[in-house]
Length: 391
Image (cartoon, rainbow, N blue to C red; front, side, top):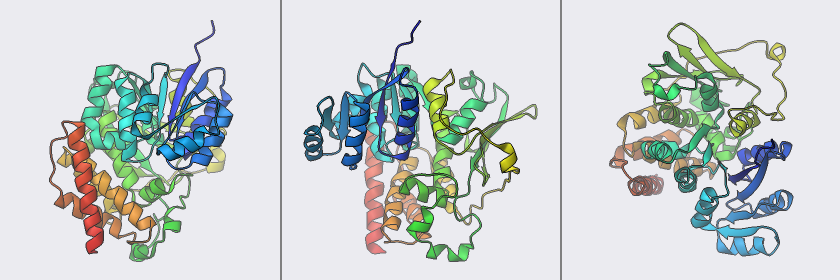
């Protein structure tokens, strides 16, 4: 019996996750077909992808960009803006949505896919950071299948039993060990952090990532956001999650059980592994990733993160414990701070200073609606911009 070909919408097709997803799809054209591709400003790159994969739809940010792209495409209908993103995420013909739009911009279309009951491959951690409770409620309500793509959360998912949703205590989990590479500055003298340039911050030692997420990795905010995401995905308290710096980035995360067993997922640092695992789940398919050579690695190192040197990790934990809209405020302030650092308007050490100031300034409300979360997001961005003006 021939299985039905799965139709996939790739939100954020021109980014690194989008590229890796398309690589896996290309290897399994008998199983998967691209239904829609989206991009923000990289229209020329999107054109090349549309000519290659021939999706039914493409989505870009502006109407002008959509008209320009449509003039060069025959088999693909081009849409634009937030409505276009929601449309291709929730379309009846779509089986699976790769949610890989970075930042708050990915929230609405990811939620649209969830509400439509799709299989959601979640690479956009901000969706859970900003609207964790609402997001998980919608997943439960719609029956959507939520599979994590972040290598760490995917590793935790693979190391947990199928019935993990009963609760971590009920399945005998003592704690989750969330691994971190430590970023490019793990061994750098903290007294020199103010001299760090955007180029240095974007040179991750193990992973090939976009500029924003590379800076987040350098500050350890990425790990802070992942801690919040893990709390929602696996119904865990921050006290049940321990961050472990593992420079080799081969053990992607571990689960510690009450009987003393520690289960880990290992693999080369290549995002095609978690993408292929989630796309085919509960089956397995080839991803194109080279087999792991244990003998070449030869050793595994582990360290505790220093939250005095990397305060963003502490700020993220604080935001989750504050609850309500605090994680959304944290995320918005971080986005503005990272953008300002990349534009060389502030120093590397001022990223956590800006975030801390905004967390203290903006009133935390109940995150009981999308409107409330988006309002907190706007207030945090306004406060962050004001901090930059006064700096």
